[in-house]
Image 1 (cartoon, rainbow, N blue to C red):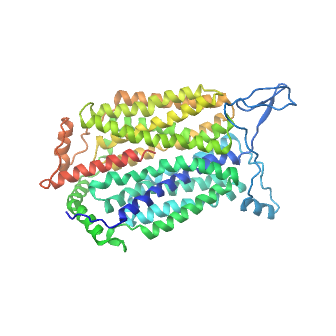
Image 2 (cartoon, rainbow, N blue to C red):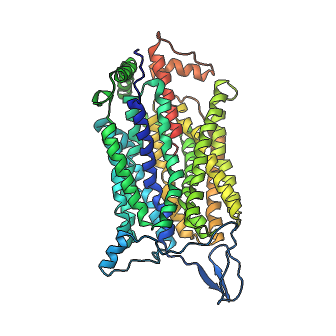
Image 3 (cartoon, one colour):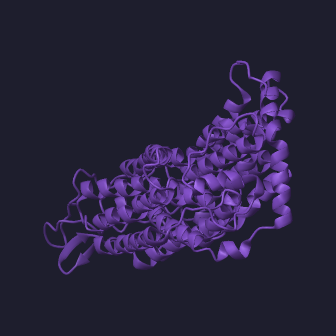
Length: 545
């Protein structure tokens, strides 16, 4: 195998940075409406209850109906004036045509808000498997790039759609989710064309751009709304996505052979590294085509369904907190839009860091045989579901205590990071050969909470402390029940339907609990098997939601 000489910034490093930002862009599109909707809705700050004027959520009545009221939130500030400091082009256009610019906000009820927030996920699941197929045929550069940039360009239409009719906005969000669903499965194909086997785990850390995107974009959007108006969040998404896409077109190519500016030494190193495994990879794919995918056995597998159940509970909790956090902090605790964005983003940064640390702990336990593989996966499932559910239950009981609510919402989101070492990693343990198919099958089912949860929130209402308590109790119950089922019935052993001759020796050793010896030049296929399993496992761990 050829050794790579230092050539400055490598094409692989450039690819890593653009993939990292690309995943941040993908999640930027996904979550921008979660915070803009706080500023878009007409605020019904007070109402009469008897002879006392009270706030919708946390309040202290200080007199009769003719007097003002004071919120009870600790350390919170009252909502900032809805008057924008910078008028948007959409408002200018509406004023020009003598139409209502809706300066006080849209009069959408809770159910309509739930439809808008959940619409992104309605058809998102359909493109999970086609994304990988299209990337294999047309290249990841086209599929991943087009998926992201079209989603960003659609952001330019969001403000006009909102002013036109909320149903038009819902349709745009549905189409946006459908198109953006192609991005995630498409990327793994590019890794196989560009990244040597011993660098793949490092490369897929670029997928963490999704979590970083959430952590940074929530507070950024909050400041944009505070100093301009909510329309400019969508303008920013469209412009930033376009700038990224231009860089993507210029710097990224589907293979080293197609890259016009790659250094000869780097291209030789990549191709020689991948060339060692090309024949064995082709042979394995040929065997899979001949044998076919055991769909019936996969669908009837108890171990598979236990993993899906754990994923369902974890994603229900994650999506509920991620989607509703801005509205919750605003409606209940009266945080201004800047603080709402900051408090909504920090938990996702903590989640990313926790996932990284816990994965090190899990790998240490497995490497030194301190716990069985199934035990480690169950431990991860316990944290990401059961412990998560306990934190959400305490959040439901926090009432008007904003400090308590902030702490336990952050803790609940943080511990979900254990999913990367728990249920997600379980997929590759059950079947390294069909791990990609299992991930796609699981993703098609577990994306459902993404649109069901906002609809339920909208039906229940989200203005009073009691309504939010019910929402969080439902979330807590879902998490705990799914987690307990996973703890009781999960199985991380190699499943019988994962039959593959060129991997059998490796899996036999794993089933016996033996440590596999390092591969050497005498066994290139064993090297490929180990590298491929490491690659699949790392990708599954980092692609959590």
